Image 1 (cartoon, rainbow, N blue to C red):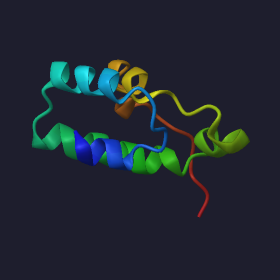
Image 2 (image 1 turned 90 degrees about the vertical axis):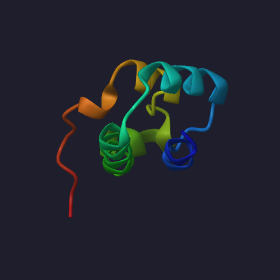
Image 3 (image 1 turned 45 degrees about the horizontal axis):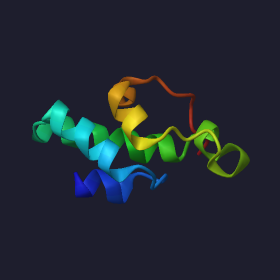
Length: 76
C-alpha cells in the first residue's frame, strides 16, 4: 500500500484508501498494474488540468478499479 500511496499524487483520506486496498488484497501482478496505471494517468491531461483538480481521491480511484480505465493519448 505504501508504494501506491507514495505514487498517488493526491494525498487525502489515507485511511479510506488503505481500507479499500485491504479489501482488494492485490497480488504482486495487480500491484504492478495499479502502479503503472497511476504513473501513466499522472501524465494525462485530465489529471494535469487545473492544477490536478480532477484527480480522484485515492479511495475512489481504487474502488472504481480505475487502473483499468482507458486514458487519452499522452503527448510525447
